Structure formats: C-alpha cells, structure tokens
Length: 122
Image (cartoon, rainbow, N blue to C red; front, side):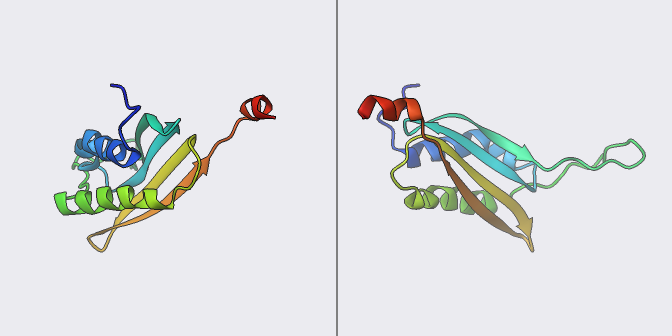
C-alpha cells in the first residue's frame, strides 16, 4: 500500500482497525507506531506480561478493551496528532490500561533526526 498521500491521522485509524481484535484480548500495554517521512511502517502492541503461578499460565482468557473503550482509545490516538509538530521521523507510543472500567492512556512522541541529512543542506 502506498501511504504517500494518506494523512497520518488516517494511517493511525488504519493501524487501530488492524489491531482491534488484539486489543479486545489485552487490558494494558503500549501501542507503538514507527514513522518515517510521515508514513507509518512498523506498528503493533507491547502488552504487559502474563503472570504465572507455579509455572502455569492462567486458563481464563484476559478481558480486553470493549467496543466503547476501543473507540475512545482510537479517537484519542487520532486527536493526539494535533500535538505532533514539524517532525517527520520518529515513534509514537500510546500506553493504555483499563482503570475503573475506563481506558486510561498516555502518549509519548519521539522525534528522530539524522545528521547526514543536515550535512546536505549546509
């Protein structure tokens, strides 16, 4: 898929649609997107580890985000792009957890620059 002319907000929406099923099975973690030239390449979810007791993993499936929580999280992620200023390469991390039946999230932007690119403009 050529993302050259797709706005970053639409790309974030596509990411969240792709990982929707996985989000329905985890109740906390980090959604990450790697950005290069304002195009998302790699993305995914880093979820908190599963806890075991006596070497056994729990047999009951973990409850993840509900449809309403997913929609709220997706909307917040798209809205957060208004805070991204002037950089085209980097990473965005969306940390999330379910607290009191609501999604609590924080966003971290990481901008990346390359000295080799600067040398060409000097």
